[in-house]
Image: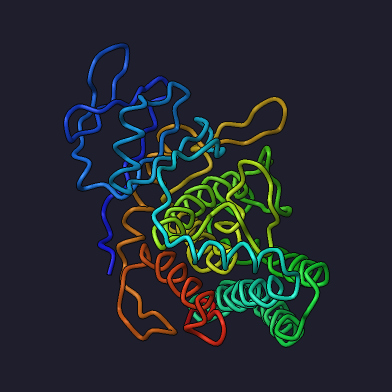
Length: 343
Protein backbone atom coordinates (compact mmCIF):
# COMPACT_ATOMS: atom_id res chain seq x y z
CA UNK A 1 0.00 0.00 0.00
CA UNK A 2 1.30 3.42 -0.92
CA UNK A 3 1.87 5.71 2.05
CA UNK A 4 0.00 9.00 1.94
CA UNK A 5 2.92 11.40 1.99
CA UNK A 6 2.69 15.18 1.81
CA UNK A 7 2.19 17.38 -1.22
CA UNK A 8 4.17 20.62 -1.26
CA UNK A 9 2.19 23.56 -2.67
CA UNK A 10 4.27 26.59 -3.67
CA UNK A 11 2.08 29.71 -3.89
CA UNK A 12 4.69 32.47 -4.04
CA UNK A 13 4.35 33.70 -7.63
CA UNK A 14 8.06 34.44 -8.21
CA UNK A 15 9.41 31.43 -6.31
CA UNK A 16 12.05 29.24 -7.96
CA UNK A 17 12.48 25.60 -6.97
CA UNK A 18 15.90 23.97 -6.81
CA UNK A 19 17.67 20.90 -5.45
CA UNK A 20 20.07 21.00 -2.51
CA UNK A 21 21.31 17.53 -1.62
CA UNK A 22 18.21 15.51 -0.74
CA UNK A 23 16.06 18.61 -0.24
CA UNK A 24 13.92 20.82 -2.41
CA UNK A 25 14.55 24.47 -1.67
CA UNK A 26 12.28 27.40 -2.50
CA UNK A 27 14.04 30.62 -3.48
CA UNK A 28 12.72 34.15 -3.81
CA UNK A 29 15.01 36.94 -5.03
CA UNK A 30 17.97 34.61 -4.49
CA UNK A 31 17.08 33.95 -0.85
CA UNK A 32 16.01 30.54 0.49
CA UNK A 33 12.53 30.83 1.99
CA UNK A 34 11.78 27.13 2.39
CA UNK A 35 13.52 23.75 2.59
CA UNK A 36 11.79 20.36 2.49
CA UNK A 37 13.20 16.80 2.42
CA UNK A 38 12.24 15.01 -0.78
CA UNK A 39 11.64 11.71 0.99
CA UNK A 40 8.59 13.09 2.85
CA UNK A 41 6.93 14.32 -0.38
CA UNK A 42 4.65 12.50 -2.80
CA UNK A 43 4.15 15.55 -5.00
CA UNK A 44 5.00 19.18 -5.61
CA UNK A 45 2.58 21.66 -7.18
CA UNK A 46 4.06 25.03 -8.09
CA UNK A 47 1.81 28.02 -8.74
CA UNK A 48 4.76 30.12 -9.88
CA UNK A 49 5.94 31.24 -13.30
CA UNK A 50 9.61 31.03 -12.27
CA UNK A 51 9.79 27.24 -12.61
CA UNK A 52 12.42 24.89 -11.25
CA UNK A 53 15.92 23.65 -11.93
CA UNK A 54 16.57 20.64 -14.20
CA UNK A 55 18.36 18.97 -11.29
CA UNK A 56 15.20 19.08 -9.18
CA UNK A 57 13.11 17.76 -12.07
CA UNK A 58 15.49 14.84 -12.43
CA UNK A 59 15.51 14.14 -8.71
CA UNK A 60 11.71 14.18 -8.55
CA UNK A 61 11.47 11.83 -11.53
CA UNK A 62 13.98 9.43 -9.96
CA UNK A 63 12.10 9.37 -6.65
CA UNK A 64 8.59 9.26 -8.18
CA UNK A 65 7.70 12.66 -6.74
CA UNK A 66 5.09 14.20 -9.04
CA UNK A 67 6.11 17.74 -10.05
CA UNK A 68 3.35 19.87 -11.60
CA UNK A 69 3.30 23.48 -12.73
CA UNK A 70 0.25 25.75 -12.69
CA UNK A 71 -0.35 29.45 -13.22
CA UNK A 72 -0.75 31.54 -10.05
CA UNK A 73 -4.51 31.36 -10.70
CA UNK A 74 -4.52 27.57 -10.73
CA UNK A 75 -4.59 26.70 -14.45
CA UNK A 76 -2.61 23.54 -15.13
CA UNK A 77 0.45 24.06 -17.36
CA UNK A 78 2.62 20.94 -17.36
CA UNK A 79 3.97 17.99 -15.39
CA UNK A 80 7.57 16.89 -15.18
CA UNK A 81 7.75 13.18 -15.95
CA UNK A 82 10.74 10.90 -15.74
CA UNK A 83 11.30 7.42 -17.10
CA UNK A 84 8.08 5.40 -17.29
CA UNK A 85 7.69 3.38 -14.12
CA UNK A 86 5.27 0.81 -15.45
CA UNK A 87 5.43 -2.42 -17.35
CA UNK A 88 5.61 -1.68 -21.08
CA UNK A 89 3.14 -4.51 -21.70
CA UNK A 90 0.53 -2.76 -19.56
CA UNK A 91 0.88 0.44 -21.57
CA UNK A 92 0.64 -1.45 -24.85
CA UNK A 93 -2.64 -2.95 -23.62
CA UNK A 94 -3.83 0.53 -22.63
CA UNK A 95 -3.01 1.97 -26.05
CA UNK A 96 -4.79 -0.87 -27.86
CA UNK A 97 -7.87 -0.43 -25.67
CA UNK A 98 -7.86 3.33 -26.27
CA UNK A 99 -7.80 2.73 -30.04
CA UNK A 100 -10.82 0.40 -29.82
CA UNK A 101 -14.10 2.39 -29.57
CA UNK A 102 -16.00 -0.57 -28.09
CA UNK A 103 -13.41 -1.26 -25.41
CA UNK A 104 -13.04 2.47 -24.69
CA UNK A 105 -16.79 2.81 -24.20
CA UNK A 106 -16.89 -0.25 -21.93
CA UNK A 107 -14.38 1.44 -19.61
CA UNK A 108 -15.67 5.00 -20.00
CA UNK A 109 -19.26 4.10 -19.12
CA UNK A 110 -18.07 2.84 -15.72
CA UNK A 111 -16.35 6.18 -15.10
CA UNK A 112 -19.58 8.00 -15.96
CA UNK A 113 -21.76 5.53 -14.04
CA UNK A 114 -19.63 6.29 -10.96
CA UNK A 115 -19.89 10.03 -11.58
CA UNK A 116 -23.68 10.04 -11.84
CA UNK A 117 -24.09 7.62 -8.92
CA UNK A 118 -21.88 9.80 -6.71
CA UNK A 119 -23.59 13.00 -7.89
CA UNK A 120 -26.88 11.51 -6.74
CA UNK A 121 -25.42 10.62 -3.36
CA UNK A 122 -24.13 14.16 -2.84
CA UNK A 123 -27.75 15.25 -3.21
CA UNK A 124 -28.99 12.44 -0.95
CA UNK A 125 -26.45 13.33 1.74
CA UNK A 126 -27.60 16.94 1.66
CA UNK A 127 -31.21 15.82 2.08
CA UNK A 128 -30.23 13.56 4.96
CA UNK A 129 -28.15 16.14 6.82
CA UNK A 130 -30.05 19.36 6.07
CA UNK A 131 -33.59 18.30 5.21
CA UNK A 132 -35.22 21.29 6.93
CA UNK A 133 -32.94 23.86 5.25
CA UNK A 134 -33.27 22.85 1.61
CA UNK A 135 -35.93 22.53 -1.09
CA UNK A 136 -36.65 18.85 -0.51
CA UNK A 137 -38.94 18.43 -3.51
CA UNK A 138 -36.44 19.92 -5.96
CA UNK A 139 -33.56 17.83 -4.67
CA UNK A 140 -35.62 14.63 -4.66
CA UNK A 141 -36.68 15.27 -8.24
CA UNK A 142 -33.06 15.73 -9.35
CA UNK A 143 -32.05 12.60 -7.45
CA UNK A 144 -34.71 10.54 -9.20
CA UNK A 145 -33.70 11.90 -12.59
CA UNK A 146 -30.09 10.91 -11.98
CA UNK A 147 -31.20 7.48 -10.79
CA UNK A 148 -33.08 7.01 -14.08
CA UNK A 149 -29.90 7.79 -16.03
CA UNK A 150 -27.89 4.98 -14.44
CA UNK A 151 -29.34 1.98 -16.35
CA UNK A 152 -29.04 3.94 -19.62
CA UNK A 153 -25.36 4.62 -18.95
CA UNK A 154 -24.70 1.00 -17.94
CA UNK A 155 -25.99 -0.27 -21.29
CA UNK A 156 -24.52 2.40 -23.59
CA UNK A 157 -22.16 1.17 -26.34
CA UNK A 158 -21.41 4.44 -28.15
CA UNK A 159 -18.91 6.98 -26.85
CA UNK A 160 -20.78 9.89 -28.43
CA UNK A 161 -24.09 8.79 -26.89
CA UNK A 162 -22.33 8.25 -23.57
CA UNK A 163 -21.03 11.82 -23.66
CA UNK A 164 -24.60 12.95 -24.30
CA UNK A 165 -25.86 11.08 -21.24
CA UNK A 166 -23.01 12.50 -19.17
CA UNK A 167 -23.87 16.03 -20.29
CA UNK A 168 -27.55 15.60 -19.51
CA UNK A 169 -26.73 14.18 -16.06
CA UNK A 170 -24.33 17.04 -15.34
CA UNK A 171 -27.05 19.57 -16.21
CA UNK A 172 -29.45 17.87 -13.78
CA UNK A 173 -26.86 17.83 -11.02
CA UNK A 174 -25.62 21.39 -11.47
CA UNK A 175 -29.21 22.66 -11.63
CA UNK A 176 -29.56 21.96 -7.90
CA UNK A 177 -26.14 23.03 -6.65
CA UNK A 178 -27.70 26.28 -5.42
CA UNK A 179 -30.03 24.25 -3.22
CA UNK A 180 -27.03 22.68 -1.44
CA UNK A 181 -25.47 26.05 -0.54
CA UNK A 182 -26.59 26.87 2.99
CA UNK A 183 -24.69 30.10 3.74
CA UNK A 184 -24.14 33.33 1.78
CA UNK A 185 -26.48 32.09 -0.91
CA UNK A 186 -26.59 35.38 -2.80
CA UNK A 187 -22.80 35.76 -2.96
CA UNK A 188 -22.31 32.10 -3.91
CA UNK A 189 -25.14 31.89 -6.44
CA UNK A 190 -24.34 29.29 -9.09
CA UNK A 191 -25.58 29.84 -12.64
CA UNK A 192 -23.96 26.81 -14.26
CA UNK A 193 -20.46 25.53 -14.89
CA UNK A 194 -18.04 28.11 -16.33
CA UNK A 195 -14.26 27.97 -16.62
CA UNK A 196 -11.43 29.61 -18.56
CA UNK A 197 -12.18 31.88 -16.81
CA UNK A 198 -14.57 31.06 -13.96
CA UNK A 199 -17.36 33.63 -13.80
CA UNK A 200 -18.58 33.23 -10.22
CA UNK A 201 -17.22 32.26 -6.81
CA UNK A 202 -18.43 28.65 -6.95
CA UNK A 203 -16.77 28.08 -10.31
CA UNK A 204 -13.55 29.67 -9.09
CA UNK A 205 -13.47 27.18 -6.19
CA UNK A 206 -14.43 24.21 -8.36
CA UNK A 207 -11.79 24.97 -10.99
CA UNK A 208 -9.06 25.30 -8.37
CA UNK A 209 -10.01 22.08 -6.56
CA UNK A 210 -10.43 20.17 -9.85
CA UNK A 211 -6.84 21.15 -10.71
CA UNK A 212 -5.66 19.62 -7.43
CA UNK A 213 -7.66 16.44 -7.99
CA UNK A 214 -6.39 16.09 -11.58
CA UNK A 215 -2.81 16.30 -10.28
CA UNK A 216 -3.49 13.51 -7.77
CA UNK A 217 -5.14 11.31 -10.41
CA UNK A 218 -2.31 11.78 -12.91
CA UNK A 219 0.26 10.93 -10.24
CA UNK A 220 -1.70 7.82 -9.25
CA UNK A 221 -1.92 6.56 -12.83
CA UNK A 222 1.78 7.05 -13.47
CA UNK A 223 2.56 5.32 -10.17
CA UNK A 224 0.83 2.10 -11.27
CA UNK A 225 2.42 2.19 -14.72
CA UNK A 226 -0.36 3.67 -16.86
CA UNK A 227 0.02 6.57 -19.28
CA UNK A 228 -1.99 9.46 -17.82
CA UNK A 229 -2.14 11.17 -21.23
CA UNK A 230 -4.04 8.40 -23.08
CA UNK A 231 -7.70 8.25 -22.09
CA UNK A 232 -10.83 6.37 -23.03
CA UNK A 233 -13.54 9.03 -22.65
CA UNK A 234 -11.34 12.11 -23.07
CA UNK A 235 -9.49 11.65 -26.32
CA UNK A 236 -5.87 12.51 -27.01
CA UNK A 237 -4.88 16.16 -26.93
CA UNK A 238 -1.28 17.42 -26.65
CA UNK A 239 -0.45 18.35 -23.07
CA UNK A 240 -3.71 17.03 -21.59
CA UNK A 241 -3.71 14.19 -19.07
CA UNK A 242 -6.80 12.61 -20.63
CA UNK A 243 -6.82 9.42 -18.53
CA UNK A 244 -6.48 11.48 -15.34
CA UNK A 245 -9.58 13.43 -16.44
CA UNK A 246 -11.34 10.11 -17.06
CA UNK A 247 -10.56 8.73 -13.60
CA UNK A 248 -11.43 11.96 -11.81
CA UNK A 249 -14.94 12.00 -13.34
CA UNK A 250 -16.28 9.56 -10.76
CA UNK A 251 -14.37 11.33 -7.97
CA UNK A 252 -15.47 14.90 -8.72
CA UNK A 253 -18.79 14.78 -6.82
CA UNK A 254 -17.69 12.93 -3.69
CA UNK A 255 -14.16 14.33 -3.30
CA UNK A 256 -14.12 17.76 -4.96
CA UNK A 257 -17.72 19.04 -5.09
CA UNK A 258 -18.63 18.00 -1.57
CA UNK A 259 -15.36 19.50 -0.33
CA UNK A 260 -16.24 22.85 -1.97
CA UNK A 261 -19.73 22.79 -0.45
CA UNK A 262 -18.19 22.12 2.97
CA UNK A 263 -15.83 25.10 2.60
CA UNK A 264 -18.78 27.39 1.89
CA UNK A 265 -21.34 25.95 4.29
CA UNK A 266 -18.87 25.91 7.20
CA UNK A 267 -17.78 29.49 6.38
CA UNK A 268 -14.16 28.47 5.83
CA UNK A 269 -14.33 30.55 2.64
CA UNK A 270 -16.27 33.83 2.50
CA UNK A 271 -17.32 36.16 -0.33
CA UNK A 272 -14.44 38.48 0.56
CA UNK A 273 -11.91 35.77 -0.35
CA UNK A 274 -12.40 36.38 -4.08
CA UNK A 275 -11.12 38.89 -6.59
CA UNK A 276 -13.52 39.97 -9.36
CA UNK A 277 -11.88 41.35 -12.51
CA UNK A 278 -13.38 43.91 -14.89
CA UNK A 279 -13.72 41.11 -17.47
CA UNK A 280 -16.03 39.25 -15.09
CA UNK A 281 -13.45 36.59 -14.23
CA UNK A 282 -13.44 35.53 -10.58
CA UNK A 283 -10.35 34.23 -8.79
CA UNK A 284 -9.40 33.18 -5.28
CA UNK A 285 -7.17 35.62 -3.41
CA UNK A 286 -3.77 34.40 -2.19
CA UNK A 287 -4.85 33.93 1.41
CA UNK A 288 -7.93 32.00 0.37
CA UNK A 289 -5.86 29.65 -1.82
CA UNK A 290 -3.73 28.86 1.21
CA UNK A 291 -6.85 28.14 3.25
CA UNK A 292 -8.20 25.84 0.56
CA UNK A 293 -4.89 23.98 0.26
CA UNK A 294 -4.62 23.49 4.03
CA UNK A 295 -8.17 22.14 4.18
CA UNK A 296 -7.55 19.96 1.11
CA UNK A 297 -4.59 18.29 2.78
CA UNK A 298 -6.63 17.66 5.91
CA UNK A 299 -9.54 16.32 3.84
CA UNK A 300 -7.26 13.81 2.15
CA UNK A 301 -6.32 12.38 5.56
CA UNK A 302 -9.93 11.63 6.54
CA UNK A 303 -10.68 7.91 6.72
CA UNK A 304 -13.32 6.12 4.66
CA UNK A 305 -14.08 2.49 3.81
CA UNK A 306 -13.45 1.70 0.15
CA UNK A 307 -16.80 0.41 -1.21
CA UNK A 308 -15.26 -2.25 -3.47
CA UNK A 309 -12.25 -3.41 -1.45
CA UNK A 310 -13.87 -3.02 1.97
CA UNK A 311 -10.64 -1.57 3.40
CA UNK A 312 -10.29 1.56 5.51
CA UNK A 313 -8.06 4.19 3.93
CA UNK A 314 -7.74 7.98 3.68
CA UNK A 315 -9.52 9.88 0.90
CA UNK A 316 -6.12 10.80 -0.51
CA UNK A 317 -5.44 7.18 -1.49
CA UNK A 318 -8.68 6.71 -3.44
CA UNK A 319 -7.15 7.84 -6.78
CA UNK A 320 -4.31 5.32 -6.31
CA UNK A 321 -6.71 2.47 -5.56
CA UNK A 322 -8.83 3.30 -8.61
CA UNK A 323 -5.72 3.51 -10.80
CA UNK A 324 -4.63 0.11 -9.50
CA UNK A 325 -8.06 -1.41 -10.19
CA UNK A 326 -7.98 0.00 -13.72
CA UNK A 327 -4.56 -1.54 -14.32
CA UNK A 328 -5.80 -4.88 -13.00
CA UNK A 329 -8.78 -4.76 -15.35
CA UNK A 330 -6.57 -4.00 -18.35
CA UNK A 331 -4.41 -7.00 -17.41
CA UNK A 332 -7.56 -9.18 -17.35
CA UNK A 333 -7.31 -9.73 -13.60
CA UNK A 334 -10.84 -8.30 -13.23
CA UNK A 335 -13.92 -8.86 -15.37
CA UNK A 336 -14.76 -5.14 -15.35
CA UNK A 337 -13.38 -1.90 -13.97
CA UNK A 338 -15.16 -1.23 -10.64
CA UNK A 339 -15.98 2.47 -10.31
CA UNK A 340 -15.77 4.15 -6.91
CA UNK A 341 -19.38 4.16 -5.68
CA UNK A 342 -19.53 6.36 -2.60
CA UNK A 343 -21.75 5.16 0.25
